Image (cartoon, rainbow, N blue to C red; front, side):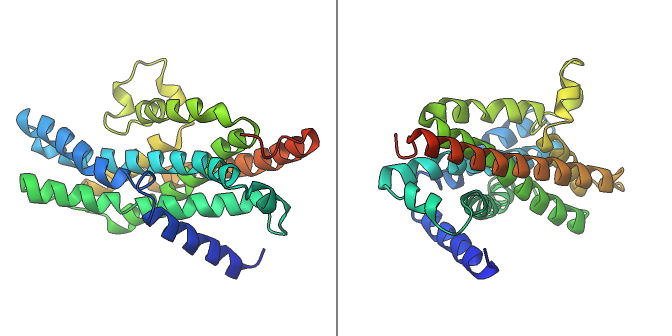
Amino acid sequence: MSPLPLWTVFRLQLLMTLRTPDIAHVFVTTPLYTLVFLAIQVQAGRPDLAGYAVLAPALMALWSLALQCAGELVSQERDQGTLEAMAASPARYPLVVNVRIAAVTLLSALSFAEAWLVAYGVFGLTVRIEHPALFTAAVLLSAAAMAGTASCVSALFVLAPSARVLQNALSFPFYLLGGVLVPVTFLPEWLRPLSDVVFLSWSARLLRAALAPADPVEPLTALAAVAVLGLAGGLTGTYLIGRMLRRVRTTGTLAQS
């Protein structure tokens, strides 16, 4: 598929997202989560941890919207009767799914700006980004990793529309294992090894390191971990979507809802 049609798919998905309140709900919940987390830390006398309270809602927004988009893509195609046409088109359907999820995930990166504005506008706190290059690289890589990992959910929806239960259940375990608000060092020791295979844990470490005045510790290792885990998720999702499509075509259940 040539880059131009892919760009068209990307742009179309952005426009659809902006016009779909159900998908864009994270832009409403992110400021509210930021208010709650910051209020707790300010009342506890720890405004120095404001960076944690600002990063957590933004990361939650990215993952939540990636998951929701991944699940709703197939459901919407089924409901509108366009899934068969999409699957039969010359463009590879798994690639189209990945591009559409990536568009929504990158759009949700605006939640970082929302969280920063709440910190400054409501609490008068200025969260400084001490290492802008590292912060930008971490955000972009994290968004790509989220899009790739979320594509695995789309594969499940091709086979089983009832997989929405799993979609809803994937949010908070990822937040916990990813150390989104509380660093993984505070988790029980038997849980900590699991966090190493969750890209969010590396993303959270990178973003916190980008806010700290001290020099980051092994940032390239963490960036590589996010990239590798994200790529693994994307390749797995692409493979699963293709395999599921072949299966449902064989069984004649492609359009069933």
